[in-house]
Image 1 (spheres, helix red, strand yellow):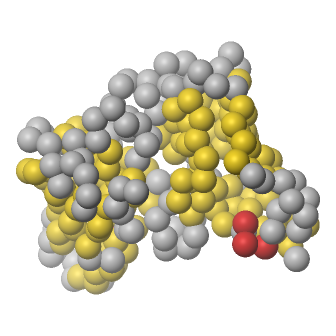
Image 2: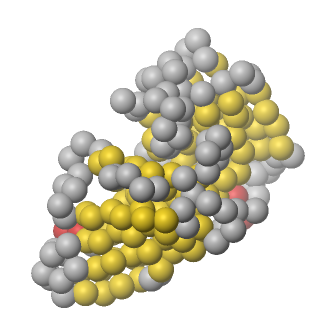
Length: 115
Length: 113
């Protein structure tokens, strides 16, 4: 089956620093990738949709200048949390699909803790 | 945009009993409805999905039903086992052709031995 790799699996950083999370599709070309955020005991909230070679489409309420998304190739999307603050601490998880398939394949998630 | 509501938020059943989780969606154009099981700190695992041209789908102890007219769908787990204990999420997509999944709020299922 389709495999999506996400790194790092966890990261601890100081307030004010930036953190980059990578999401790679290992055995398929991901035409579309999605980034979700999940707070403890809550649901997965869609942050943005990214299509290869295009600017990401952000959901309402998500700051695009704070959460930078790049989908420069068909196998890699990155999420950069800029100037992270403690309230950005969360579980971030990516998912990917390819043309014509509505089934999403999820990465393993990244637990971000901002001190 | 799409909005998915899920009930109940917690569900406790005795081992061997059945569990039912219900979801409603708002966008009548949505056409794909997956269910995920998530364990703490792990990625969601797809357990079953259904498309809008089908009313019911079954896979061993798990079944999903869809009522397009009422815009609701349900997950049924029979003969529950302790290892079924987890958080279950419903989701919907396809309303805007973007394949983005909108998730319900989740149901924490506890199967008591």
